[in-house]
Length: 479
Image (tube, rainbow, N blue to C red; front, side):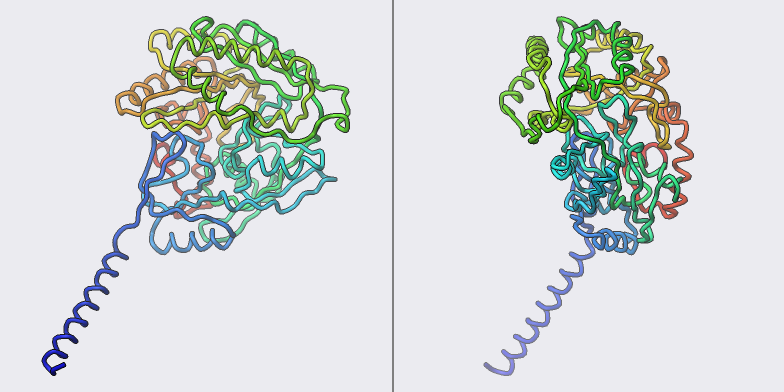
């Protein structure tokens, strides 16, 4: 090779190296980004990245990096909230699902300490051999403990309030990477704000929960008119022998918002040793999904499904079931990934005596402005006001509506207006709505339903002075 050729080669190498280095610099300066949404798929944001948390150091490192880069942090579990509570535009999202160890089980004290990414299913699998049971959880066991704490869920046991009442303590990592313990006697203000605080005060690392005994129930289902429901439910609750209770009100055209059935899981004299305590799994998922699909699409499908549900529950009349298995209903059939539509949940808490009034108003409203209302379950929710963002400040009927809706701007705008009217009906009856679902309430409705909102914001800013922890819901209503 001549000297001239070697010179040209050297220049080419230098230019290539410079261009390559420049490309790396430009690429590193480009904003990272990925689309984040939740199971409802009506709220979304382009987040910086998602961190799959496995260790406590992963949380600390993500917080340090976010602060260094001037980014916000959001916290996510299974993402079944539907109002942007688990992400924020440009934020680092902590996916806690792999942070799921069981840290301690004290069978004598009936307490368990779990990392926040553990699901209720995992907790059940650990405690079932010890004849222990969860006190408060959702109807399904697919949710994480941390997500359940962040939304302060409630369950089907009429003797229990919301989840906060079963929590002894938790540990939380702050914006500074400091780990704090919160309980009713230590950092009590943090305890009340972070449970039901949607991950806005810090990252809940683990929690110690109080358990109860696994027992054997017998199942009893009653058909009733919606006007009978308050007295029947109150009698069931006051009997002291009802372990779990859930009701449904018909969305079928044949008995729209009039017919109900109520299933009670009653204490039995059957010793646990004589019962089948093996945890049941999912059964007939595809068949149930098919029937539920007909219920979504057709009025006759809703009529058929209502009749089949009634027969199913009647077929279980008097049959024994353990508490743990009663708290493991099938959920696989609910998975729904339509390209254009979503199953959306809403929940309203109405004073028990004013339940018929609310249902009458809801029926009138939905006949005037029809929607595809697929299902409504009704639970008893006793007064539970320990959390700052408490949703049941009196004994209430909790109605969970499942609505199938197209995700077009026009349809969602219509649903937003209709939701505000439904919230108005609840407020007129002295009730509230649940914050976990679509952010359709007006700011005035939010303030009326949650009068301690300013106190919650003050608590957040006391522990998160830089507002490092952020989500789309908070930005909409409180920022």
